Image 1 (tube, one colour):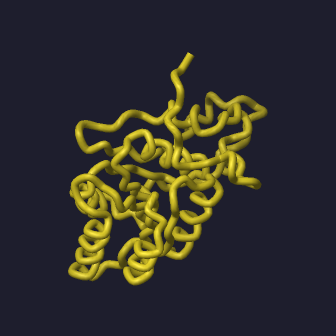
Image 2 (spheres, helix red, strand yellow; image 1 turned 135 degrees about the vertical axis):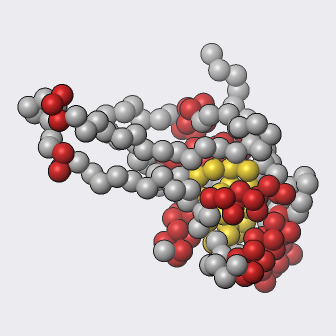
Image 3 (spheres, helix red, strand yellow; image 1 turned 180 degrees about the vertical axis):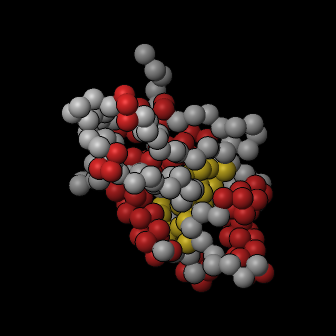
Length: 207
């Protein structure tokens, strides 16, 4: 049997009316975040980065299709696998939980464990939304935000929607976030529905 699960930053028990899993109907429903977390692949090398969650492609071989199978033209269009959210969180277990939670809402995410690697990862994948922890061990979250804003300004590209995700819910940090123009401010732990709704709103705003 699996060992005890670390205390999540996402509190499903406090979220009445949380969004239901959106996995296909033919697959068994995931039992909370624990089973989702076990399905997440471990970080690559030292960066702690997660590969983007892809969408399996259906076979195009119509000769192998049963008579009762729906025709090719009736199948849903291919879904983009571009990274939508970059999670900057230094605790691997928490980062994986956030990625799994977003995946349940069909939001493609990667994570980065170090603040100094957040800008290169952003430049590489250009996600429209960033979930940013403030208490990073190597670089303060506000410095990461400043570096990303400077890059966007210097290169004439729209900046990402940044959602602060932190345990620091004091008025001083909230005020700094407001002055910095962050899109949202989430205090950990937070309900699943709150996290998913905040990211969806940010994605819709970035379109």
